[in-house]
Image (cartoon, rainbow, N blue to C red; front, top):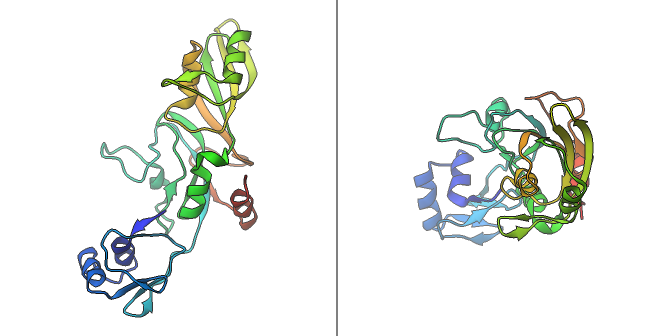
Length: 238
């Protein structure tokens, strides 16, 4: 993730944030060999930073696959004091951020990383990373509603991209259905809004797959670090 230069210097233990700002404006900081004096300049882990000619130690890059529980916020902090995804990584000595978001009441696969380049690639719409959700909905989908979901529905005034739809289980007695939905977009409350567009309320929602990654062997609240080969596969996604 890109960060302000003075924040990176402060986090490296070189100086306080205010002192780091003075180092920059006094012309004592270089980024990729070039003198930087403007406050607010943003850098990422790929940039080489020197303070008075001495390179600062860069944070190593790590990405984790996390099984997010329900009732957890997909952010680093919450002003309401609710549990956040970063609370599960307190023993990890890196500043991790979620790639994208899962709603407070949605569980499932979430990637946590300090690799800004990877995060930007995966979140960019043009890369169309497939995501598989499983929803428990009220009511039974009609053939024409399935057709609409497959070909795109209007949400927030715009038509969604086509989705793959698979009915996993139907409970005719309770009038509920378990439906698998595969999408590559990631708009706010998208899956819930797609089902609302065909007049069905989502009672429970989970993300089971992200690209080729699954929750295999993990239980709610657990995580594992991605291997080098998995990172390479993600970076090669088209």
